[in-house]
Amino acid sequence: MFGDLQERELIREFVRQLTAKYGRAYWVERAKSKGHLDEIWHELGKAGYLGVTVPEEYGGSGTSMTRLAILMEELCTQGVPLLFLVITTAMAAIPIARHGNEELKQRYLPAIADGSKKFCFAVTEPDAGSNSFNIRTFAKQEGDYYVIKGQKVFISGYDQAQHVLLVARTTPADQVKEKRHGISLLVVDTNAPGLSAHPMDTQIFAPERQFALYFDEVRVPRANLVGEEGRGFRALFDALNAERITVAAMAVGLGRFALQKAVEYAKVRKVFDKPIGAYQGLAHPMAIARTHLELASLMTHYAAHVFDAGQDAGMYANMAKYAGAEAGIEAVDIAIEVHGGSGFTGEVDVITVWPMARLLRTVPVAREMILNYVAEHVLGLPRSY
Ligand SMILES: Cc1cc2nc3c(=O)[nH]c(=O)nc-3n(C[C@H](O)[C@H](O)[C@H](O)COP(=O)(O)OP(=O)(O)OC[C@H]3O[C@@H](n4cnc5c(N)ncnc54)[C@H](O)[C@@H]3O)c2cc1C
Image (cartoon, rainbow, N blue to C red; front, side):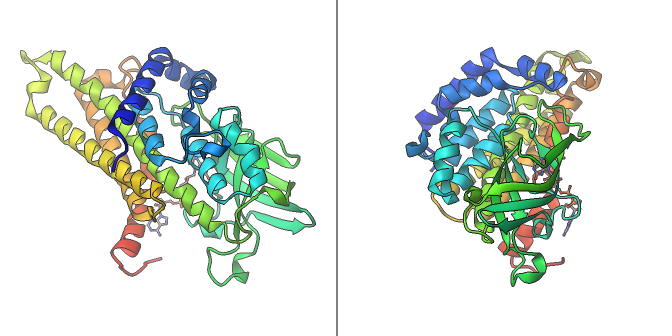
């Protein structure tokens, strides 16, 4: 069910070798300088690992969320989270491969697989927030083009990407029967005339930055539509489920990275004559954190398995994201505690994991919205909003 065990170990071994070269120190240096991670990205592309969500006929190894989850989990376990694995490998490649027309697939998938092109993903708007169907960015059809007006916020990696996978309305919300109708996905070039961007002051300690995007009459060919006009929710749900699974793997890996440091320290740091790891006040929370990480990892890989089988992975992807984020936060928190005062130094490098681990409770979908989903769609409880 969880993929070939030998293949899993091969992926993990590849990542360990790669991060021996481009490891945590490399990542931290780029996080401080807001630099790019091009070296590791291109090595992943060369070795075929950016093609894990791209069908073979377009230069990939076939869509496998299982492989992507293993890759992300192990990179983060080594302290090297790559946000573009979420926003390009999961959120752009999968909708284009599953819903894009032939021209789009030929144009973008091989370039995603070899690492030469990156996408960012833009859905969030200031007034819509978690209510994504309430977005107002509008793509109006004019002949062979869409003309786009609107605003997006918190768009990660815009400055490094060549394209935006944009979620926009093509029919106003008050003219559709169901609120999810009238939404479409479009590929927009990041240098398109009329598209401008401003960096936002997000503080997550990562190389990637967030941007507010302004679309002022941006013209995009109709051929750039991903899937059917007005029925973009299908491609959107594929993107969001893939995103949740990848983010769950990221959270689990970050938790493992921090917890491993705590365990090593707890074995050697002696206070009151004994190593602090002997004190159950620390040992038990570490053991619980490890248990929760393993449970979250299992759920993540089960969600990936259901996704790869072509079944509705919504319930599992949401639960995996919830479990991964909570387990990641718990592990990073105990790792800071175990290190005492030095847990707050850059040298120990666990406080530096905290902003990202904490972020993943709220982003890409907030914990409350996941619990709303489970309450409504899994338990069948009435909706409160
Ligand atoms: C670092 C970072 C990177 C990001 N990257 C991207 C990106 O690349 N692309 C992109 O499109 N977006 C991105 N986002 C945006 C992110 O997805 C949103 O911030 C997130 O979905 C929450 O939306 P919001 O900020 O509008 O919060 P809101 O929707 O305003 O929610 C505020 C709070 O209210 C709660 N809430 C809202 N409605 C309910 C309800 N019905 N029941 C219970 N509680 C509720 C929420 O759970 C949350 O706790 C990023 C954000 C950050 C901070």
